[in-house]
Length: 235
Image (cartoon, rainbow, N blue to C red; front, side):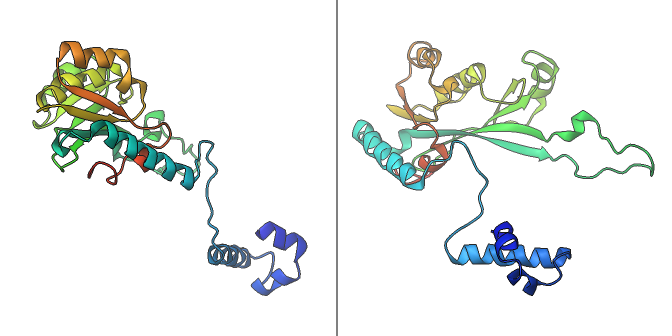
């Protein structure tokens, strides 16, 4: 918008001051932002997989209808929503202290945030399951054997090369958490990550754990919108 005004209404933009001044340019941009906001527009970063709000609403309603049609007889305490989220505990610096005239480069390791992934599980009636905390490291390595046993009790810990969820980590969740939390016919709500819904997972649940839990897979590309409290309970 500002570019169009400067090109086509240049004489009008002089009301913001000297066109060579940074302050006048900032005032022009702020005016454009407020004008757009008043008329129902907002600035957004383009996203390839962006879906229309109306499409997401339709997806949520369709999933809610299907979910309750298939699982209407399951009590709220036996509906479990599992969701992973990153937790950053050390952010990379935005500035560095260096001697004048020397390089201001930082080590590669200092450019990235220190992060773990946490798998949260909660029943539709509000009951919470133990956390699964995924640490960055080599499975079977020093962190796995020497550090994890020293971590605070109350959670289950796993190690993965990038602190992400994968098939092996999900198997730990099934064997060390879900197995002991299933109280009856249970529905486990998960997103469409392959590690959550693979044939290997179904085999572990049906054969190895011999539990009565079934998977309810959320529609693709809609987890943040569909996985709310409106269709089966609080998360």
